[in-house]
Length: 119
Ligand SMILES: [Zn+2]
Ligand SMILES: [Zn+2]
Ligand SMILES: [Zn+2]
Image (cartoon, rainbow, N blue to C red; front, top):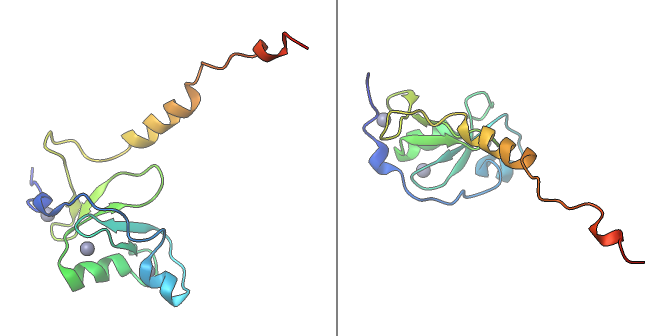
């Protein structure tokens, strides 16, 4: 299976904004967000009318974006037009959302009644 050869351009980036930078500046809206893993630029996806994430790729050549949507962790290479796999061949997909769900529902350390003993 073909493997993306651009993963060396992934940096430890901080997202540049809470939403699409360009759309926020224009006062426009978007559908989904993508974060550039080379510089941290946040742009809107191809389902959005302005497609700023793709424009960012064409303008900078930064190849790999990840989903900026809550619970999504997949990465996409704009050069290869394929999902990016990690070193073990797993796709970045699905697992963080499930882990977060388990974290939310798995709390069993509350102790009811303890505070009501003394009046
Ligand atoms: Zn690639
Ligand atoms: Zn945008
Ligand atoms: Zn970038």
